[in-house]
Amino acid sequence: MSAAIVPSSKQKMVTPEGTVTPEYQRFFNAIAGSATPFASVTRTSSPMSYTASGSGHLNINGGSISGLSLRRAGSTITLSATTLMIPMSNGDLVTITYTGSPTLTFIPA
Image (cartoon, rainbow, N blue to C red; front, side, top):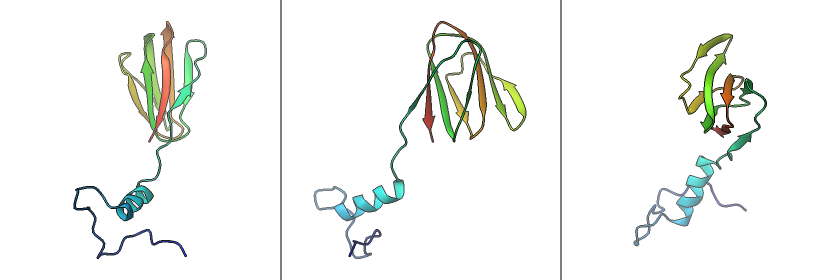
């Protein structure tokens, strides 16, 4: 028989030493879930496009960005070339024009 996920209302949350009890640690871990790891984005020749496969942020580090745009639901906006973190939803498309070699990382939500 497996242990209940939700601790009993009679269960203490904190030990006398001030740490969270194992029962509540398991509970908090179960509701928080595990984080999705960062995903390196492979650069292609400039200009390049990246389409998000889920919600998150695209981080741009280094290189020399001369153009940056975000397309969502059929509308495109121009972003400042100094934008380093772009919030993205599933299906959003970011187009980057660059010289040098920026490092691109997608950080899932």
